[in-house]
Image (cartoon, one colour):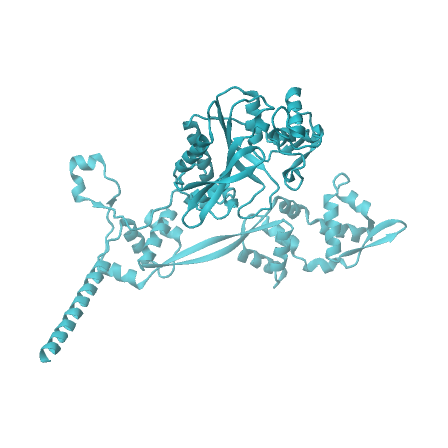
Length: 544
């Protein structure tokens, strides 16, 4: 038992000695922290002042510019060697309109003097007093005469008369003109302005008048930060231990190395633990990088990019794609129609082929949609609801194989805006037309694209679209969200390809870019792709 008591006692003593040793080392390090030459210089200058001193005076004493003095003072304040106090001083200056009124007088004051002189005046007479060609000042004058209750309007003989309702000497308490006149000399501090007004009018509150002149855009207020610096007890102790101002080297030059004189010189110390200033280099918008990546992938697979008009005819947007004319997607609640029509921009033979295909299936073993196809519905102009209108029009003008094109562009639908839907978004459209292409080729193109975009887990589910058969919906797997549908694809029906003169299979897909971009960038709201959030853009990683 005695052994254990002695052991615990010795352990406690050793632990106490260790703590004292750490304290001494820490104190010695704190006391031995080397100050730079500029810090020593500024600290000695502050110590020579009895109270708080001005940075400008310190700059004159030390020969260092004011900005460098303040930077050094902040560094000393971090070490507790000096104290910095800040005050915000209010300043005033006149606007251009305020300068005009400071010289000429406020419009309502001049108008009131005119009324007192005449006894009363009509509105037209008052306007003539200012400027018959420009009634701005007369309107301002009348407005403030009535608001200040200096005058009233009476109707007499079909005329509107302005009649003063107070005496001239009752305006002696109004200090608006005086404030404008005093500030007109230049920028003036709030305290100085108050003293000048008090000297002229006696003790008077000016805040309400200042606010009124500012609201009339005659006066502007702004603040300046004034700083003063004083030494602390810790700073005095540092000086008492002895400091000297030595020239410091901030850069190692070839001359210092060649002569070896660097050995006897003192180098300025730098705190490598201080955080550096954040630098935000120019970079491509994250969403644009994704669009560029998609273009690279398809061009690497041998595709050619095409473009088309934003405004398309209903013929190319719906009819040529074998969408029935009574389909719900064609109604106003789903589509942005423009208030105009235009003759269908297609050969008469092609238009007739589409008409027959809709009505009875044309020359194919198809029943079509039945009913009468109306050309006037095909002439309606709308903002395209998909880029398929562009690729189909291209296919109609290039009916001979091979055709391998894609289109990345904006489409428009009447969607209610929420975190996953917006009425204006981008779509990736692509088609492949050639001899012998099959459904397996289509799945291969899509799988290759999504894997290159960083989605290794892909699956295809059967889907339905009016202009493709067979059709699939493409889904990718996200561990935190499960399977997510990103687009549709299929092989164009013969009802689409036959009227435009295409005799070979056409693989087609339309992929939603917004949702894919959200997954790639870790967003939960599709609207974030289009917001000008500078902080998000700065934090976004620069990756392809």
